[in-house]
Image 1: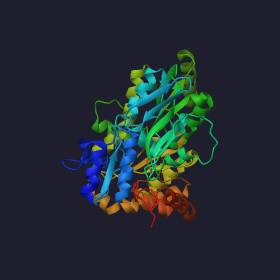
Image 2: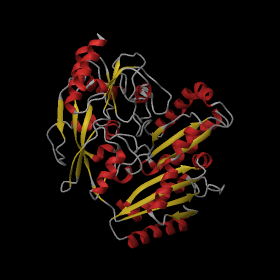
Image 3: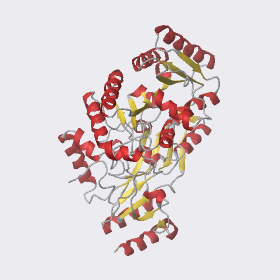
Image 4: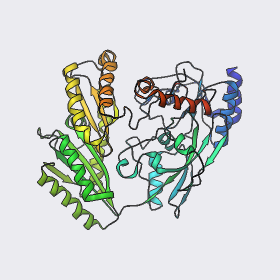
Length: 474
């Protein structure tokens, strides 16, 4: 039976695009290299029609499909299970830019387009596509939309959902829903676009999208500020909102230990204030505006002066060029890579109301230190929108693998219970995947869970698209 399906798939997309032998690790192993599955085959269609035909063939054979973009997700949601029976459907060949509509401020692209390519294409056309992630050189827009990715500019532009005006989607039955018109107003029933975005390939396969574009900013200013406490980081954020308004594009917070890992593992990078023991946190803030460079810089520097006077900033550097700004952002974006160099760690992608983040961190830090003396906390993230990457590293000298095996479940329980207490979410931008299915069942209300199951059953009654991800039906 499997052989008949493989032959059918080869007839649909070509022999070279159905992979069953050799090293399939690029498709079978997750980005963090903590999980690996086994695929019956990796299928690489080159068009939406081919995707639809592949889905029809798999549905007829009763074979589950795992849609995959750049495979850079952090919730183990885009690799096959270990059964050897699932088809990985890779969309990387579908990477065409279908068109830029300058008057409509939109760009229509295929799902396999790499995010950085979209940014560069938009810029060449004189526009900004603001979605920005550390993995932008390899992640794809289909995956970004399937997980409703966030990144560093959510504060101003929103998550991937807010940047998308329309989708093209292949249904679990192999139908094609064409919804890429780029309308900003379309009040004709249920919002299928928003239903598909964030569904992690469990309800349909995104094959193309129409995305919002913005004018390129005339001025872009970046500062790196030392702050004495998280309370004062929140105070600085409030000042920035008042002084910069919609021009406040990014506001990142980074704990001292997180930055020390960058300094340790990437010594060529200059980490501001890392040698100052009295700097527990740093903030990276960015202002993008359409006013003149001189006017924007004057307002930006006035903000920092006010922050100094208020005592919420103890030191700061302002980038003097775009190159210096990129260097500062590179330090921030190197934190996850430095963590990986330090060894396996326990990642938490959480969101908390901004006003409650200082109390959450104080309480949870103390709780973990009491439970596991010497534990090291890698705390950084998008303070501007309340999203922290509150990660846990083993004590110095401890074996990372042993630490995870012995303590990961307990640490996750402690952190997620604290998140619940502070009315937050255990997954802010990374999604649920297979990694957090049980956590979802513990933290979502029975009513919400049953609504999700009803949607999944209604759209995918065979449970063929990414089964066991996000929501379990049994």
